[in-house]
Amino acid sequence: MGNRFQVKDRFADGAQYIDGQLRSGTSGQSHTIVNPATGEEVLTYELASTADVDEAVAAAKRAFPAWSAATPGERSDALHRLAAVLAEQAEDFAYAESLQCGKPIKLSTEFDVPGTIDNTAFFAGAARHLQGQAAAEYSGDHTSYVRREAIGVVGSIAPWNYPLQMAAWKILPAIAAGNTIVLKPAELTPLTSLMFAQAAKDAGLPDGVVNIVTGAGRDAGEHLVGHPDVVMTSFTGSTAVGKRVAEIATATVKRLHLELGGKAPFLVFDDADLEAAAHGAVAASLINTGQDCTAATRAYVQRPLHDAFVARVAELMGTVRLGDPFDPATDLGPLVSHAQRDRVAGFVERARGYATVVTGGEVPGGELAEGAYYRPTLVSGAAQDSEVVQSEIFGPVLVVLPFDTDDEGIELANDTPYGLAASAWSRDVYRAGRATREIKAGCVWVNDHIPIISEMPHGGYKASGFGKDMSAYSFEEYTQVKHVMYDNTAVAAKDWHRTIFGDRI
Image 1 (cartoon, helix red, strand yellow):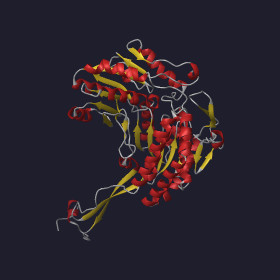
Image 2 (cartoon, helix red, strand yellow):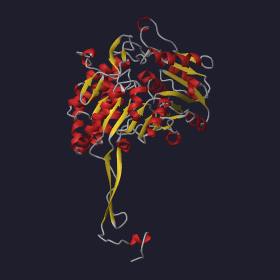
Image 3 (cartoon, helix red, strand yellow):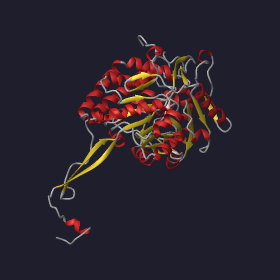
């Protein structure tokens, strides 16, 4: 990793980034970021108060007129410069992401950081292509066209599982469209969000366009969502917290974008390539130690393949290497905290009463004992209505259930409150096509599970929320659509006026 920067030196001035400057929070309460692989302190910082949130919103409000008046080309150029700065600092971003999250360094360097750079480059281009309906004389007597305008100050809340990517998903479409933003990252993992804001300044973005407040959800988060000068809220996190965010946002009639929980089905038909499905299931269930809202969590396997699938997945899970996140050979790092590890373990322990833990289901000892590690876990024999099938576990746990008919498989895949992502595995194009049509999820992969690309939208159905991240569709969230209509007749007394007063001319 080369010369790693010292976190305590880098953030000596605090973990708030307001109006172009790092500063300390003023809540009087501190929080300690812990390396989940070792339990060691990374940084202790002061949390943001509601007054800090007010200052950040005020800074964003001041910056809005000039930034929203910049041309699309000017905003595009700024984002192209930001992509270049991120690329120059890629090693630091990968190090900080793995340090605060416990991600294997190969995931940070090959997925999180390059994905964020690509997303930045995409929005640099998208900033110049705000689409609308063609100008035309739709009424015959008027010319109509559509304007897309920035909406104002956006107040967003990002989760701890992908701190860098989620910060980018919130910030980039907002500022590409001409808005300014105040982002609240999770208290556990604020480092790369703060670094992203600093990189934006290095790229020449004006102070106040991007602001970061790191505080408690019930204090800083709720105050940000309810702030009268915040016109839109974008939240990624659990469905339960999303409901609270919606309550606060709707009370002040804010635009709302929610990306919430998931319980992705992994539907394997009996004509699927068993080896491909097994490898795909292990990768898709264990990415980011299972702390991914689109991770494969429920594998439904048609009965002729079920037993072989369980055996092969268990075999492959046994080859996964747990270890130091900074060892390039490590496959699986710790969960984000010991509390999250214990929560995951609780689900598995309760499942032992009604299902079979085929492999895993334990905390490793030895050198890993101090970290928040949990072995890759495969569960079979659970009922469809059981907790381990219906609830979001957010850990390295895959549950496998059999099905008989195609109708049953699709019905089971849809049988949770969530609808964020899913996959279907089959060699039959018609079978796969039916699954893509009938599974109620915002993304359905065929013979793969997990890949995302900047050009395509990400967002869910049902209790997984609404609205889209990434892609040009995200501008639907972050712009106002205005219809402008010009009269072309220069006639004072128009024929339609007779419907209100007078007679036909």
